[in-house]
Image (tube, rainbow, N blue to C red; front, side, top):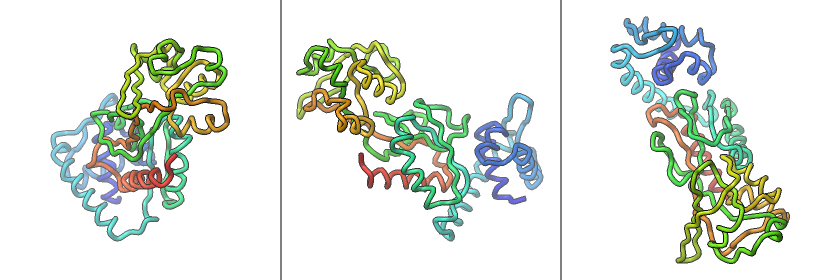
Length: 295
């Protein structure tokens, strides 16, 4: 059996603590994962993993060997990258991102990447929360945030601008909004389920932090967008979602002189040591693509 593949299987199992999760991530059967682990143990002449029906963990020998095996695999991947062309990247990449960003911005960039690398397979999980990437075998998370999750490594790949909007019908049926403080008297649509909703707005050297009333909240921007289209209230929306509806007249910009805080779009991963060459290439591609295709 291929020792390099066996080493990669061992590394993944060591971090996922699951033969099943590793099988799904590396697109192989669970029995094949077992065979690769057994082959590694035969080659090294020692037991690397404790296996029970409920848990998998490293033995002392496995812990000692893991770091050396990771170094060897990293060196092998580097040597391979020096002698291979762009079409040699292969394997499966599992990504998580939000519904709104995945559909509207990520898919075109992913399709372009897959055209450049025809041996790559990509699986996208649409959810708007930080998950245990190792446990769920996630290679890459794309998140819009002011600060990335502290347990993950984050690379900013784009800026997300937001805009305050509402439907013409809602605005015509409610009091005029002339200043940020007027927002306190309106129905606002809140992102996620916080006890307090504070919208930060700026105008040149002026800054306002307005605590708004959000009777309706959701953890996905497209839900709030559709609520606004159905005249439920005001919403802060990323421009990549709102611009189409502003142009069509279905939404109007509220307080156009006041700008919501920009957020960064991060590519998040759990460890630099275990970053596959294909994932590293995808991060670089997303960075370049989103810079070249601003919204």
